[in-house]
Image (cartoon, rainbow, N blue to C red; front, side, top):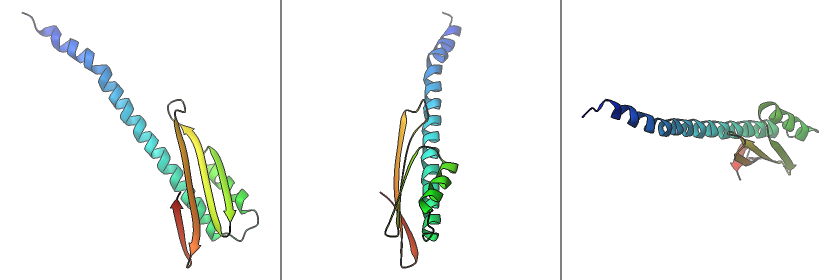
Length: 117
């Protein structure tokens, strides 16, 4: 009996599964990278806003700052020395993944506190 073709058939059957797994790992990694980028930019923007809370057009400045670094629907609320930023976006793989991130930042005892809601 000749076994030369058996290895080739097994390889051909397993190859699509391996490619699918590699693609899945890449997409999950890219999704995590994007979410972490959004979180980092939101935190940096809140920190900037809290350090410049006295400016009159702060909401516009923060919106422009975020829009220059990330995309999506940006909602900023400034009330009683607190800044709340919400970003919604669809990313990756034909916009199948929804991102909805909300952070609140405020100063307490001259210390900046930023929490995810």
